[in-house]
Length: 517
Ligand code: PLP
Image 1: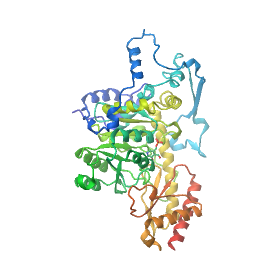
Image 2: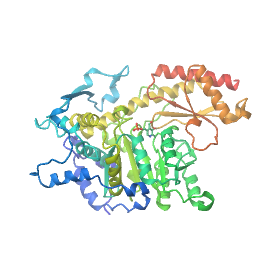
Image 3: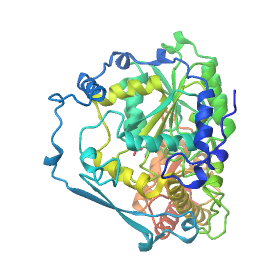
Image 4: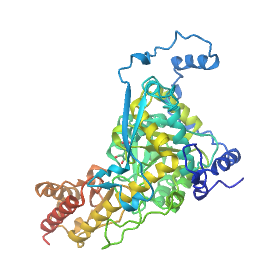
């Protein structure tokens, strides 16, 4: 087998016309590698009954006749006339991020600097005027369940550049963000009563999405690298159907980068261990990875928090990113969920799912009767910004800027924690990605420890509110009813450095008072 191009090679090639010279020679390399890649395994035995039953929408079938014969006059589809759409034009002002701006600052006082902006427009007839391949008439019209093909093309190229899937027959479909994507994927893979493996602490919407499906969650113990592979191995090896009252789980849900709530990021080694176990025990992996691009440079205590290492080029940037589970997968057993929520804006409600053709086809059937496709206005704005203003390289420039900004925010929170929190009773791991710091508090040193872990946690939480600081208790995220110790989740995402510092100072006071320090 010809070895796949490494990310570093990919950075030197361009895939779309809008991409910079730096990404050019790779198209040919990718195409030839794609040919030599293996096909995904047929893992359709993992489909839920609900998913297997889904049929193609007959209305969507009718459009295939038009594609075959352009002379057909259609009285078929109930598409409203674009001439009657009330929206004539949309404009969006977006930054023109340059790689260097990550060093010099793209934002000041939480706003974009004026000379970094560019105004984009889409009109109903931008296509006819040759200004775009996706105009407002198209964006406001009914769309295929895959999402707009013009935007999807960009996302597939981006996925190829960044993750370089290791098998041939992969595809992408657009989602309404990762909350929507995970619920859709859960329904594709889980029958009522099935077990599913998750991390010991999860994003609450994950748990709430699984409960109505009557899925039984098993939370695997976590350490500073996230889900522990030794604990996962033990569970899978020792699975006893009779004792458990159900078959071994067929699905593992994981947030490998900047996990919510713990901030943990899996090393390459851990990712491979988890993947290999999933191969060995035939599990599908749902990789929910909204924080992938918020992988940060090292934290240096005491250094100026705003001075952040910025990779010299997008090639270097890509080479610093950990491989995703999708990038490791050779069999088509990973369903990767990407979202624009953390790298653009959550209100866009837009993301995409990558996986083997077989799974993407089932998700398409689901989209046709559910989401249909993300909002056309959102897709139009993203299309303008990504393909007309930025291109692949410009998008990477944006991500470099974003990561630099979040890194300096993380540094400011860690500086405040170093300064104000009593190390005698608490500790934390420096997050290398994401938006969260996970604070561990040693309940055994608390004067009222005999009341139980949760009682101590709630006492601290409520005392925090009384002292005007809101920090979320670990109990809100844990899967098992039993608590291991007291934990809190703090975020550095959207609070100013001054407010973060004040909030941490206040929580330090709470800890000292409550522990009698
Ligand atoms: N998954 C995880 C792990 C998250 O932390 C979040 C956001 O907080 C989401 C999904 C939701 O993302 P989206 O806005 O794309 O639905």
